[in-house]
Length: 255
Ligand SMILES: Nc1ncnc2c1ncn2[C@@H]1O[C@H](COP(=O)(O)OP(=O)(O)OP(=O)(O)O)[C@@H](O)[C@H]1O
Ligand SMILES: [Mg+2]
Figure 1 (cartoon, rainbow, N blue to C red):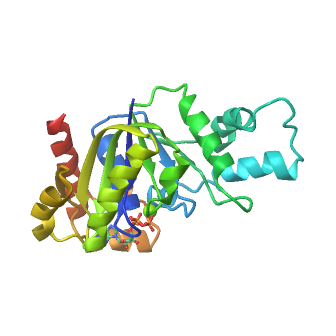
Figure 2 (figure 1 turned 135 degrees about the vertical axis):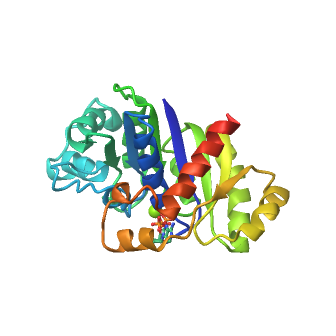
Figure 3 (figure 1 turned 180 degrees about the vertical axis):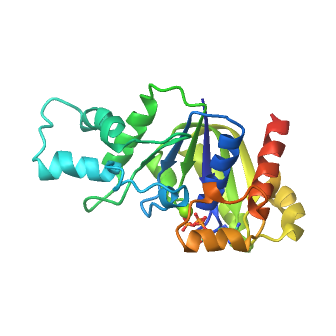
């Protein structure tokens, strides 16, 4: 079981990258596959053609809210996170033909994400099904690192934008991840669709981290996202898909 996590500043193309990675892994028959939407804005589901609500599934935030607010909660003697864990698998897990998915959902009360995150972490730790890959889509920025949803991951992909702030982001992300105690085997830089390949050299000199390639700027992806179509249905000839396939082939070569 390998866990891949995307990171990066807002809007660099993290979620579409996860969706295209999912398409690649499905095509390679590297299943079963679990997709985790850790972004409260939750658009990973839509990008892979899943309507949680229509499938009768709930987000982790909704399940917590049902348990602790609407039904009054009977938390006596039981750690909240362990009580919710089985519910996540029962009522939160969307099970498709090629992949499963769950979503952390929108913040359910004032304050921090501690409870949804603890629940998510426990649920992830208690996986019974043997997934080959788990892809976690993170929100933009670094704040979520403190939430430490996954503490042990195989690969982190930082999707860079074209600005010099992206360089600062990468360096900070790489440092903070270690400070908060997230362990990982590999930390790769990916050029987002708006990244300029001219900056490739600077990535290596500035960050010292391996650069795997750039996601192609692809009008078809933009159209699919805009119209809410699943990126899993994008033709395999799509420039963006081809570039993601190349990035993942490169990654496998580096292993
Ligand atoms: N390969 C691409 N080519 C062209 N446009 C793209 C591509 N990938 C994403 N986009 C455009 O960029 C927008 C943001 O993409 P995406 O949601 O994947 O970014 P994100 O990094 O996940 O954003 P956020 O930080 O808000 O989660 C999309 O709405 C889409 O229009
Ligand atoms: Mg996103």
